[in-house]
Image (cartoon, rainbow, N blue to C red; front, side):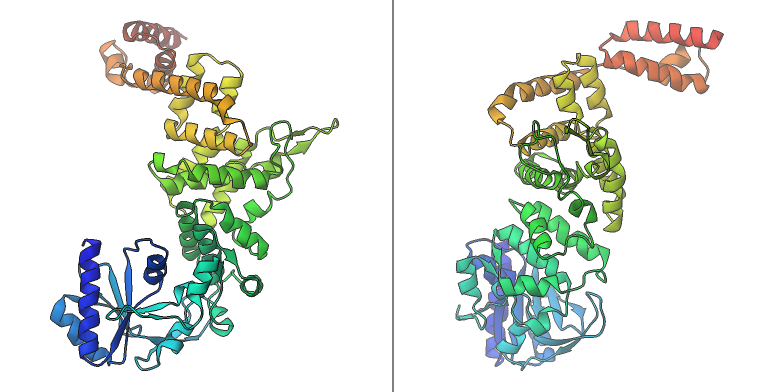
Length: 454
């Protein structure tokens, strides 16, 4: 459903609730984003002053009501990105993010209802009918001053996921976390959180922030980086060769690369996967970095040792198999483009690199972000970037040329056997070298006959 139609439906609900003797408010991110001049497509409404059955009759009269859960008092209307909720009181029953008992209380008043929310900027309410703001906790002032501040200490600490939400909002909006909120977050345990919840907050921070580094820097300032992201925490203080990395340690470099990748992610198929690759590309430096006798720092092989660290990170937060394979491939290959350029390698080496990459175009984008994270003069980088693009175009042209297939081998008199795979591998190497099809087939057949004779 279009945004304008959803907004009109929200106003219909507000009018009907008012006629029934209640009040309906826009709440949460919709109000916050509206005040910031941004469009929020998911609209949340909170209905006060009428019984649940009255609200249900109203919703049934204007749409197809769907109930998320009777105990939560939350409803939807089919085909609308619209949540309609009754105010509720929550009490902690355990250590988990979902361990709450919820009691619907439509007559608790706006102050009590807003008090249970996480941050002041999310606790602003707006009367749907009058447009009047109800701002019990100074959320509009904090929006103006660009501050993330918790609403109520007693309620805030009941949900440790709010620590990550705090860091995510800081990254998304570029806001500062209030000192008292930072202290409170530093004291909240995160180990009981479900991995899926960590994953959700992380991925939102990676793809919805211009500077996702703020997410991790905020968690680090709260001493909350190590429980779920130890591979990143261990990068702090890992030295790098200043000749190539004037920006500082491996953690600083990773944060700069992450921000650079954020500016390139519109060019990739999956921004989540690409940003994860940027985040984890150098985590192998924790085990591969060595300081030689002459004082020089090297991290030879970190692109391979990084695969294990990246896997540990992704398994911990339950990243899907397809994304994991993409990240593994990108981590293992992120050094190759610049290495081939520096070595003035022949086109065949570039073709082999692109052939082994799960996403050649995106590999070059990651390589570019890596350079940007070294505070590299990007004007100097343009010739390298052009060479890599020329090689990629050559690879794309190569993809249009025929290769030797199993059918070709059968027609040449070879029967299916283990030799097939060996011959096709040999033919593929010839193809990467740009050998014409007819010559490729002749040489492959000759190779197979020689191998069979042995």
